[in-house]
Image 1 (cartoon, rainbow, N blue to C red):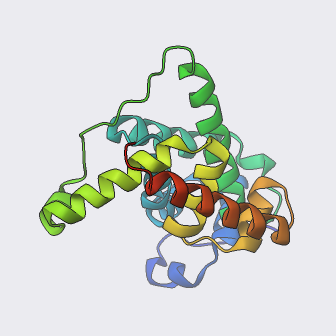
Image 2: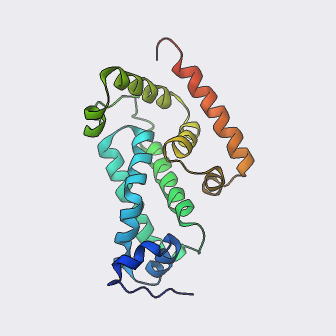
Length: 190
């Protein structure tokens, strides 16, 4: 079933699901990609920024997600769109991580979003920096679970779809990852 969406019906597009829009894009209505971009680009950027803590890399990886969505639009198979796009994001992050693994030394980038600097007190900023350092000490899989669940507020069921696991297994993995994060966070020196 291919959905017919008139692009001049902008007010009604808020009621159209991501899945319906993606099916229309897969059928050739590429102009609708702007709607999905508007709905997801901030989420994708925030996901990557929590994973790599680098503004420029996060922007590049976010762009790569939407390029892949367009490139592989015909492989979308009417499933949960959010799970599909996060799967693409995970694969892009994994590829990025593998490429930079050899040359990477963990460096905390001082490039913060301006809104963080304006709204957060100095002590609060220190706590956020400490948390970010602790996050970076976790394995990629643990960090990814915490970012998706706690920062992106993705439900366990959806995370299970994204990573190809069961909901109960995801709950256990998130709980264990948070426990590890707490242990790292409360160490004296990171």
